[in-house]
Image 1 (tube, rainbow, N blue to C red):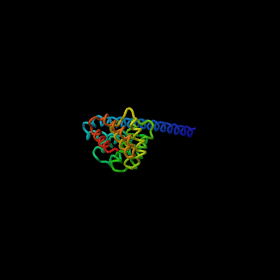
Image 2: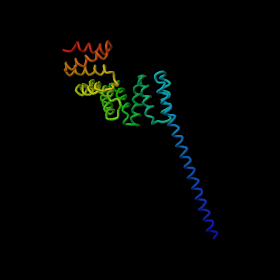
Image 3: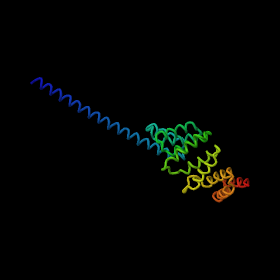
Image 4: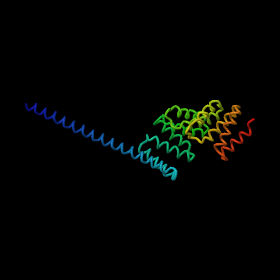
Length: 230
């Protein structure tokens, strides 16, 4: 009987220890989750602070975006913000890195794909830029697809693919509302029409540029192109 009593006591002790261990582990898990949630909230707060100060104090915004990423490396919007500031500073390699990081977090992040394409185009990497614009357009929920189509058209023009460039720019021109100045989109489409020898279409589109941008730089460019058309 004593042996049996001691055995019961040992089992009871083990169960008590196990129960306490479970409670401690659960408590640690709750604390970790709370800390993680707090970090995520702080990260988003720094990101919003960066957006709010971007137009007035670019350096302060940059620091806010950095803090947001430090607290949450998967904050894709903060990485996009860092990429934007780097691009404005002409630090294209760093901008490219941040946009690629944002895309790794969310491959459907069309805005990052489009901006990455612009950074690549600025470096003359036309094939990669075209690939990035097309990746942006693969997302049916992309809110401003005309922006990617406009830049895709430009990149295809640079590569000499005028037929595909025309199709991309025609789609961009038809966007309503437009996220690219309509005068600029019409001007680029007019250039492509003239390259393809579509003189009548070029005149029609370039004439619209003059109506959309009275006396502006796009009008001047359109006037020069019209003068060269046969």
